[in-house]
Length: 330
Ligand SMILES: [Zn+2]
Image (cartoon, rainbow, N blue to C red; front, side, top):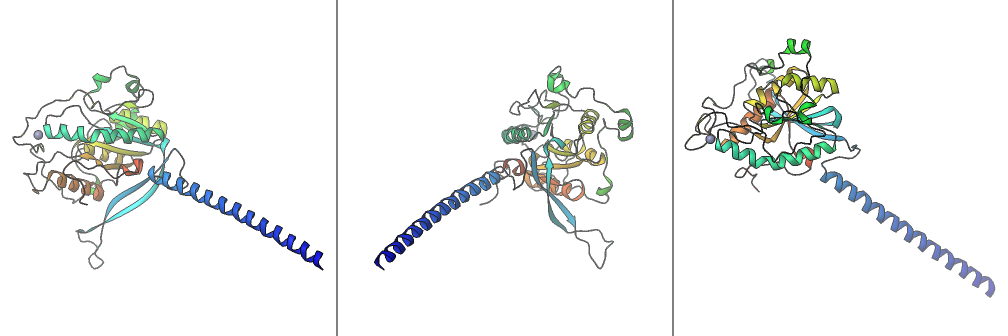
């Protein structure tokens, strides 16, 4: 009996020991897995990525303003709009960024200084975009002589589709409005050229290159200010998503031959990066709001009638860019 008891005790002890070891191992594995999953989730959040996102994909949050229709009077002109945010996952190789007119110098001192202020953040966006195989198109209009014979210029120079060009006048500015802008009211008075300085700057041509802070990768990037070259290249390469950034939203970004309205006409899935842009708006003109509020009003107009917008957060995982003096209140 004594012997039996001893054997039983030994067996119980052994089992308890095994149980403890298995429990310990399971706990260790559990903690290791938790740390692994948490770290990866954090990395994804930092990179602005969600789960199940491939290295060359980008998750974008498209912001639009949708008109609220009055059920009692559906034909009335809408006065209220609701923000609608749609998430899409874009493949890098099907996406391009166009950098509009980030010139080294503008005739307006204020405009030149704001370009300098936003360029470092824009350069970070370009670096992140290249890692995702997004095509970068530098479009410093009227400055192409500076880039003559560079590989980035040569890669797109002369791209041309006669039929497409004839149909869409792809080398001309978009004058007038899109059908979706029918009845819309332009939110700011920019008839004086939009210089906000005191005294006002003298208008003229001051630019001869893109601002140097924006790096040009001669092995990958493109340089063009031609609507025909840009859209032909995109069609050849199967690029259907387009992110417009740069200046000025109320003039070149919306109207140039490679601008928002033209890209809409071409059927491209085009968006404005709303934190990396600026307007030419003089706050001494209607609607007599601050310069930055003027930009906001133009962005709202674009979101209502032209194309959705995104922010640099989608590529960098950081808070959106804000000019000094226009930072969000804490
Ligand atoms: Zn000025």
